[in-house]
Image: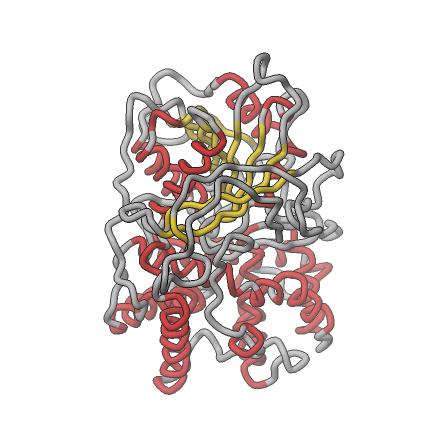
Length: 534
């Protein structure tokens, strides 16, 4: 979804409170002291923290990265105990007296994803003449990666041992097994992190961002957030409207769906995008030979999934691992050729090697990133109330599975620990406009599965100065991914606040539109992937 705590110093902290958990210290005034990053991967140029997640960008000159840490209150209502955030920085070369545009905080989403690799990559991919004018700041949100403490609830080697139980339960007994796993995970998090779980919220992460701004000595910050990072940015803008200089939200979370409803909308959108993949495979039937129609390829897909129930590929890939692999295709069509080759090799020849290769490349590391999953649940389960009666979940998933079978049950089990989470969901920050906010730039692919397009329209409706740039296609995350139309508009906005569209926004549709990348050819090359969850 890799990092390093840099040289850290500052005003001496008071002694750790008696009985305070490890990683929580008494609050004192901290300063940022930047220095070399003390781990080789801290702030490394990481693939797939920038979209597209499977596209290898051009190799830019490697910028210099500095690291630091910052202590922030565990509880902003009682700021005596603190935790630590890991930060990194790529400094612009422009003088602060001439042409410097301040700081640009970046967040890749999640929740639970590290922002340290993203900072270096954003600095490297910003257009010429703009990168030198920003200090790009990455951070690991509370509980993530090199921030301390970092949440981990279970032994991933045991909990994720493949093949896992099928995500789609065939009967009540299989459902009970999956339900037990969800309850087990929630209880493990409570046992280890009961003291911290009440404070894992988007609101607190937004307040952490403002603590970073203050520690940097900046009156205002600019911000670029992807996916969940768009919601985090909108919360920050609502809490601190007079402290925002530029705000770019790419692949926009539906503010009306946080969080149970957003997952149901994802199920429909991922199913549609999976059907796009199956139809693309059918159009290349001369290569893959899985059927000449989407319906035929879909039949082959679900027959393969059923076969893996009793005969896991290589003893590793059962139906749930298959779901993990092909869910990645919902984020980016650049890997469709590899996914189709693996699909075809298994169905036509019984060859499991390409499928195993795809699993190692796209799914195995995600299963090992238990820290990211723990924080994902910690934030989403605590942000808002979730249904506590499993009958509600079962009824909703059974109904939705009938028309959107690809991800409905897998997504349900991914989030099911929230039904048993020890901390009840709270009241989210009300997103609201403010005359002090600058114009806001929204970027959204029209067939995005992870953050469906209607959510971007609803986000635009909340902020009078927001302008929506729609991008054809369905790839998740667009900015600085090589789309010249998008990046040109992004550069203009970051430079001087220039926005697109008419003075009066259209009631329906975007304010401007860019063409997305064309569908891949069957010979498309595949890059590497290291990022994040749903």
